[in-house]
Image 1: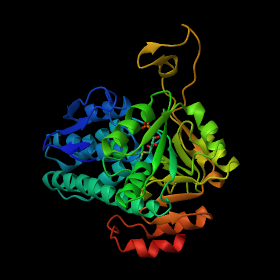
Image 2: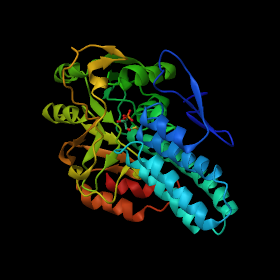
Image 3: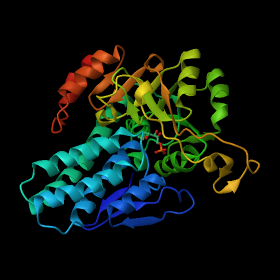
Length: 363
Ligand code: MRU
């Protein structure tokens, strides 16, 4: 986002905006160890799958820097606890585990403590910059699907705040606007925690992109009236068969899109595809506190004692997904084959822009 770094490395701590305080206050917090990073992820001060991945990588670095032993074996066993603490922060966004696995591989391959510490920082910085490049590339691919004059519906927040980078669903919208297309956005408010109302509208207003806020239950009304040309959302985890876990309410939108014959696009970097999960049935869904449903912004809206359910994500089956837009290209059915090809060709350093041409194959 213009003039705004979502995660900033300060040498012995990270600085990030507290997303729970937006849009009313732009408060920055500084986190000096992995416990603080894990807590910030758990409480959604840091949120959105790629943002969680980048933060976890720096949390791993902070954890490593705070270990004072010289023995490599003792260092690695303390580092294991760092990884465990971060991995317990949230269960659904696979970018968290993907980043921790990358960091752990670097740690295991290092010769001594000093070398491991230096290489962990370099790896976290690589994760951050590769993530931004992936966001920009997928946004270029996605923008090709957006026509001048389109009205786009989005859910939750998949912009710079959620990615510590250019953005995924909102990145595509921003790129289309940079290309000179006139687009309008409808943003679902996204109960219970209002990421759409608080964060997506805030980002789009800052970018000068026209946005209209609607409550989640208005989406069908506007789609049925023919006012929406396509839906674009982000993802927290994508199974190898193309099933997509994203913010609760995404599945409903996908069904509405199919019923009303408009495209339903999912935008995500390849790091959001989990090669170990063959279908959405195996994606762990985070269950959060019922207080988030019985209250809005801390104010009780339901009677004392009423039970409330609070799954934070749902799974959209692949047959409702018109395309998955990644930095490797626009992927359509059959997802098993095409996502498999992408995963097989994906190398941690295989990030050149020339991959754009090869990726056109998938359209
Ligand atoms: O609970 P949150 O706010 O972390 O959920 C975020 C989402 O569901 C986003 O849509 C997803 O992480 C994609 S972010 C590019």
